[in-house]
Image (cartoon, rainbow, N blue to C red; front, top):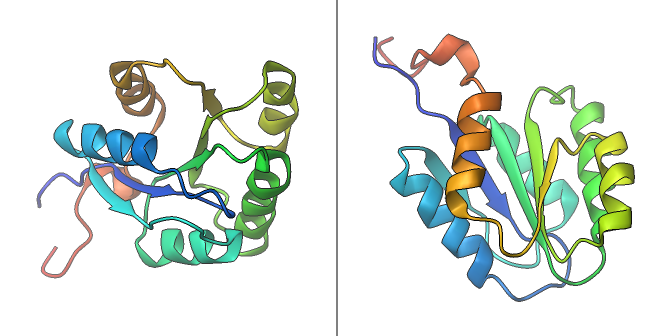
Length: 143
């Protein structure tokens, strides 16, 4: 049975159309050996959670530059709880004022990465804090 890779969904909630940073993170996580799904821009919290469940991810990485993070990030957490998928680790990034970090963590966002964070720091955080579902074993066909 093959070891299962950490699966990450990178998403841009809301009307924010700037996704260069999200694409850099997605590529860096992929290059670090993780399986990455990028949903593209302008996703609703419902679309993000549904994609995360369908793709059986371990992590959701939310990127927001529009200033709507205090509405969109908690909504993602609310839907995850409604769908009994709160075992998915949610990380946030983008332009997040320092004063908003503690309230977001209280909502369940595990960590916030601000501009200037090295991709290696994000990779290290995920590896140290997220275990692939199924104990790291591939649950695919034939396993």
